[in-house]
Image: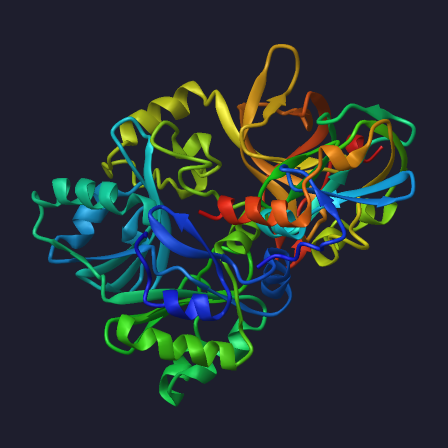
Length: 129
Length: 369
């Protein structure tokens, strides 16, 4: 069973979102990295670029497939994880920690459109069937 | 539920992620595909490839039959030697690629692709009626591939003293008999040294346990795919099928033109193609930027000429995107691959990419600049 921390918010497309004051950190879930297998390449957005909610903003590629990352909340990118660019396997090893992807200053309030841990768990369980 | 090899339970116990492959429930990996890939390049790993078909051809005219069925010539084979060949249709299209072992003057063994068992058997049966020979599928044999530089140190120790001596003496593409109907061959599909081992299904679980106990890492079909791609070895159904010939698949070397009077199925079509020149060829691509090449991506030579990636991926040994691609015949050494709307530069090389753990190609001078 994959790890779904209670303190994070989630999207149906398997991104996680962590809120610290007015900054959001975004990555892919343990379930997502597990389904993708070993990650070998990451494309991250440019700092200062802006995205709408649901817009493609990054790509992660594993030995098996390429997956688009959708911006969970409209906002402006303020930082990207250079370490993950150089070593994509960080995302496999520590998806909620060292394997984060980028940080965003949001234009809108996150809580209203994101899933909580329980809702995301239900979605993952339903996809398994 | 798909078909299962005798080792299915053992794979589950080893935490395999199981996927469907040609109707079989097979291990994709046992945790990390890349780790398994490196194990084979640097040490030793074992693949359960019992989903592949083993078919024996026996009889006075077995050799005459196979001379006619295959593009490579079994006449060249000494007893216990192996040969890689394509089996073609009348148009020269590839029905399957396979390994044939000569076990006795009147006795041959074929190892065929899992996904082509039915087609191959039908095709062979259809033609064998004209010969004094019989076809026997060996469903009571399991097949393991033990691959990597340490395979030669470990594999012999798992057999009797007498068998071990024979296994140690095996040269590349030769085999020796073990157990009942069993065979150990110095062959593989990874670009590393190693063995392919056929044993009765009743003995295979015990042998698998002995391999794991000896420190051999279980490896899944995921690593098998990246290893064979690095080694520049075609995958049937992906890099070739009945719509292309060996000449269009970087397999001209497997076609035995001599003796010129040997008739084999597809010969006429191949002769014609050779005379007229091939329009398409299968080449290796090495992506010159970070990223991953994937099957079905478009390859652009110039405004007039384009091709397609047949199988692509990320090379764990080179840390680069690599691919096999079918493109118009060319002497160009660079091309562009379309990835998510961008055209990225790639070098055109003759495979393999990796041989015995090391980079196996040189980019031409103009590309180094």
